Length: 225
Image 1: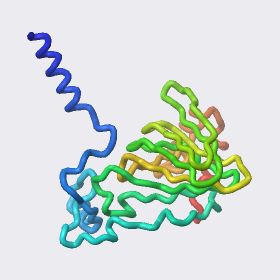
Image 2 (image 1 turned 90 degrees about the horizontal axis):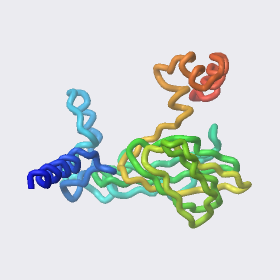
Image 3 (image 1 turned 135 degrees about the horizontal axis):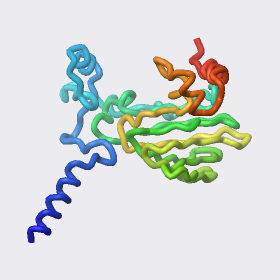
Image 4 (image 1 turned 60 degrees about the vertical axis):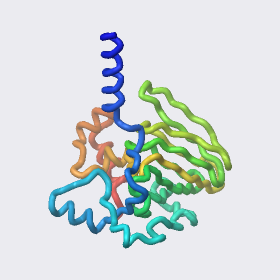
């Protein structure tokens, strides 16, 4: 009985200390984000994990509405793709609800370059066109597939993944996340355009190239002024 009791306590401890797979469940019906209040909190040095709630008496339907994903975004970018996010920063009513969407549009040949979402699993639904998609596991296994209009593909939380339009026609997807603010770390931009910058000799050794090549890459990826 002592052994069974110990196993029960260990199981409960693991359950209580294991991080949630997505954003925590809300403890009230709504908690519309109040950015103005959060600005005050930052100034005073008090921070919260998310956004504070707007006064319920001041909540309006517009806090839960957006048409931001209705139209394609402009794909004349460095990579020939554009991500339009519909997260808590754009829709305050998403605060504490643990979900968000994005629309991604791709020019012919466009790429959503290798990146990760540290706080969410992603699932994409193809609106138009076709895409070559893939992710890499921590065992360095590459899992990929070509997906077409009406099809779905899932990218596990935190794993490096991409989408590439190898067709001659534009493509677009709707991406869903189990986080109100999934976050994105583009591998190339994170490493080569950070502020302060990652030292050239670190990047050169990591990628086995010269520091001159590192400087070239940094100059190409630097934000346009």
